[in-house]
Image (tube, rainbow, N blue to C red):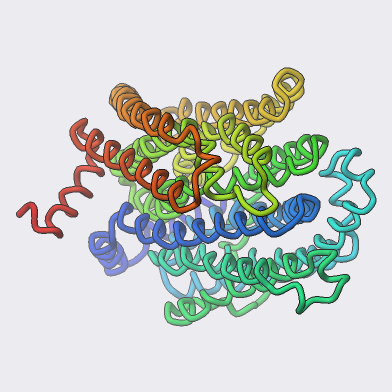
Length: 551
């Protein structure tokens, strides 16, 4: 009998009282949307600070330093996604939920064994990264970038320091997985805020307080990453202590749950690795363009993550524990309804946001980054990238809801296969589209590969999970297109009023852009309400009750 079958039998034969408690806890637990909104508040706070951080970087530092920082940070960030927020957390949560449904002791043993293994792996990886950063950088950067001796030396120096970030941020992802499994979402979502605070402080650190060498090599930016990672991980320790699941490293090779997590991690690790390999490809391609291109893409990424963080990131994290519990209790209809409902909500928000960003790209980039060393030419280049890349948020938001559905049923192999197909599509398209449209071609190729990823996950849902009700989903998509068209139409009206954005003062531009975003948001909510999007209706009804306009 396989390990997964043994675990299922243990859950099915648990005492009646345990099952009663589990059912009661499910009834009393907050809804997915409520959990997602808790996370959205914390995540949005972090993302806003992230945009502030990038705005300060653009204004205060030369493009050589910002390019080097962005390139060096991609390496530890890659391992963070591979080991932490990628395969580990999504493989841990379903097994932890299952173990916890039987007994707290079993869940604690899983946590202890997994964290012990993680500490050993992270210690080895961090040491290798500190001693040999150039090995990683030579792989991900273009020959043109490497040939710039001064810039490459700066990148290697920053990468050495920032590899310490891998240790802290992977620990954070592990802690977050435990707390999310227990229905705790606020502090895990707020924790990245502390990383961004550390980065903002390091960016504003007075140059006179640094040595000439430290100023030259941007040491404060690299150390800001490390200190922020430490704060982000340790801020969750009180919640872990309170919940009774603070990891106590204890090596136990006989722990069956640990081996089940590791077995589930293998395809997830490969799948996440394939997706992150796409990031490496993009870095290598973009590093062959003019100086500043890497920085422009980094700034655009922050802009795109801002609306995504409002719902997509939060929903993806909040869904996995709920879907895992529904599947464990054999509630397939509830599982599918929850999955489809929040996929629709995700796509609704991301489609409207993409339309708005595409039309208002120049004034938004000017407002957030157009000052100091970030000149008019930089604004135009970054806005061009934003226009060709903003559509990716539609497909990424879909993947972030669909992937947890597969992981919840312990199918980690199919998302791996889909990631591989998407990567092959990108490898085929990127050089061809870049030869015609330059850096925009790279963005188009990345977006198309994300669309392939989402499409394949969606098309196999019926066969690998349960009946998805595609007819109802298609009707909702048509409604989303109407909402997006209304938002786009209003955004075009404001764009005509903002055509002279470069001549406006910061205050006037901020007021006009804020008015445009607020107006588009109002049209989005009203049109979504009258077109029958249930979650939007529920949210607006609650809001009207709070302000006393509805009983």
